[in-house]
Image 1 (tube, rainbow, N blue to C red):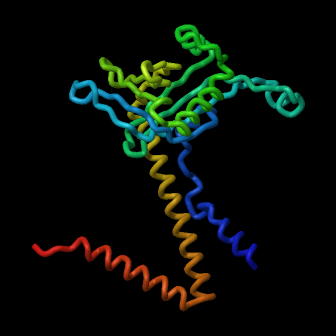
Image 2 (image 1 turned 180 degrees about the horizontal axis):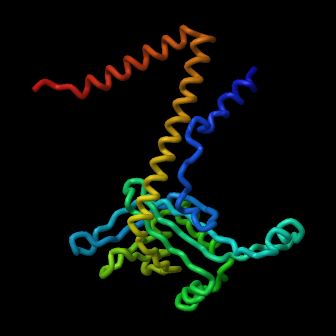
Image 3 (image 1 turned 135 degrees about the vertical axis):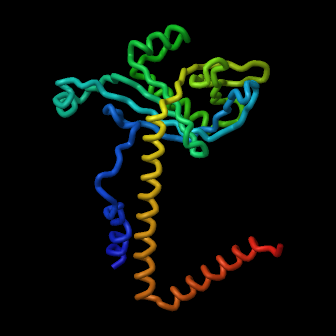
Length: 249
């Protein structure tokens, strides 16, 4: 009986939602997401042409890779145990849950990465690039103690461009480990992401409503007195909350 209830609870997967749901704009172009995390980031921006506006924000960082379309990929994946697919493109997206229109992108091919590698004296290869960035980001999350910083600096002359800096701070010196250039996505792309996030929110609401209805029906049948207690508690809670918001004029 318990397993049946558990199966019923996990069966709510949004099946009542229209199957023609929008595609995640981030995955267009055969990209695969390999990392997603909110990372504390020190943001420097230009407001009213005054430099120095700084804040700490939890920036959602997503990493994506696009695998090369090789005719031998399927064969190698199944029969070659040492096979490692080659990365055609690597993409990073920055977004902020508190600002729907904040969306920056960093996208490079292997040839473009070589320029970054040479200009910053990086020793990692393009294949290692995603995994090392993942480790660095996790390090910023776990040890955010003002010594391992992620700094987002907006371009003074072009507000559509920014630099993301991995900074290690010492007592008397700050060391920039790596700098990545980002661009603000176009309005059409930002709108597509907002529409998708809105759809996902609606989807979550529908799933929660289905679960709530299921729990309501089960408790109503198995333990009506408990349901009455729950409803009474909810009414009292909402009455007390609403009472605090009223005042005489």
